[in-house]
Image (cartoon, rainbow, N blue to C red; front, side, top):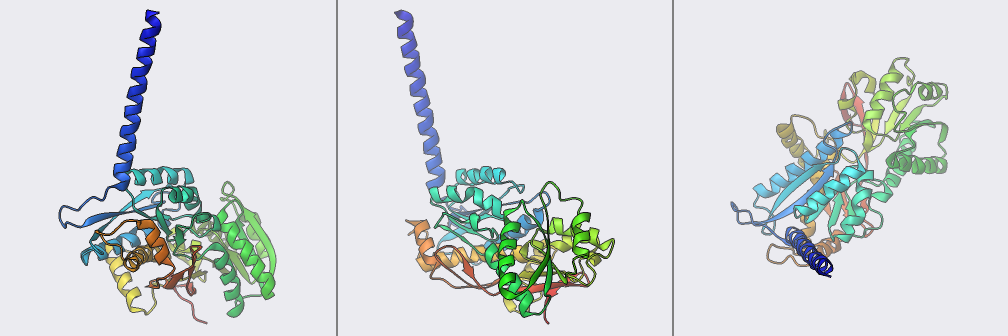
Length: 399
């Protein structure tokens, strides 16, 4: 009997301790999520903007560009006194191009008190956290996650970039409207959502516009080293253009291997925003000569705000900004514009997320990537441009 009583007493003690621990953890979680720290130097309320993307590995150029562009915007806004009593604070976590790592990074940002998110750079990463953002009542504006699944099921999630369906459709229309080709070869990663989504809508639009896809060649994320079979098939296909709805790292390998046999001679290699950064990935820039990519941003555009951004970016990072950098920059300014429209201030910030979401469909942002508006499903509308690589430099394409 004594042992039983001691056991019961021990269980009660352990249970009480566990309950106290859980309450402490909950209290800490609530305090970090709900707290609004004040910057000691400026006296402004801190607004933590979380970001996630690859800053290491094959896709690091995308994540670092988004991070750098967003940081430039944050620094500009803070230098001008912040916004409505807030000082913006950017915390950007490395996803290592892994959805699992993105989930961990998201959890870390929530623990740090994230109030708004510029989401994830890559589509698969964003898709892995979009449900959590909805459950946590976090407004999410991804600069560059373009797949349908990246923001699906979350009415608090938006994007700055074109969606995959719109990119695929726009690419086919551009090829037709500018008379670039009538016979097209396609080479893409069938294991990747971004690539597959682009191909599906591109194919549909080609059929509608009377463009002939003469061969479709695929590979996967585990077979992306030797492209000799696919390149040979494309060379023999009679194609006038090869559509590459893929990322720059794979495109660099393909173009380098094709150059060994002049396999793409007489063809136009054409891609979407995933090809942005190709010049950083390819060993010999001559192998990328003539490559075209559809993009809403051109660093050599005459627009005054674009040139101001390019100069500031080059000064800060010693390189020419790409579309992903512009997307990151525009995302921060879109958040600020939504806050202003919603009348959110450091003294009036209740229902923060719902007010920003409501404002997103009312604002117009004249950004680096175009004049943007948003629909309730999170999609943006703006014009697309095409870049072409000439003499080792990406310039705005003109017919």
